[in-house]
Image (cartoon, rainbow, N blue to C red; front, side):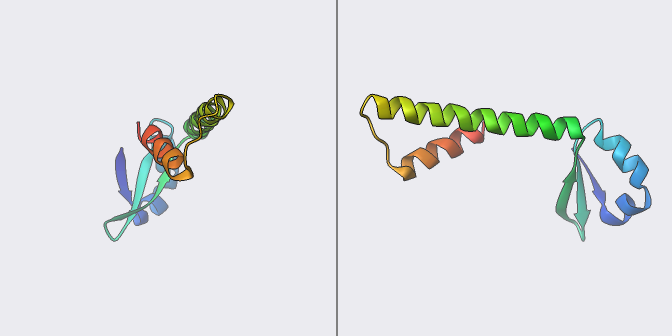
Length: 86
């Protein structure tokens, strides 16, 4: 993922948008990342993936509940975080 200083992003906004169609672009200010610009398609794909992950985790929880096996909220959220990092 390319990183572009905020001043360059502002000056060359059209080029930034073109580059973002190929891959996400990090915008930095004073050397620190502050934002990411990505295509609408990539954003929608990311949102769908997050929603699917959430649906799978909910179904796992419901299956455990139906079997009478309960998991604490802490364990459930820890498992969700591990899964989302993959």
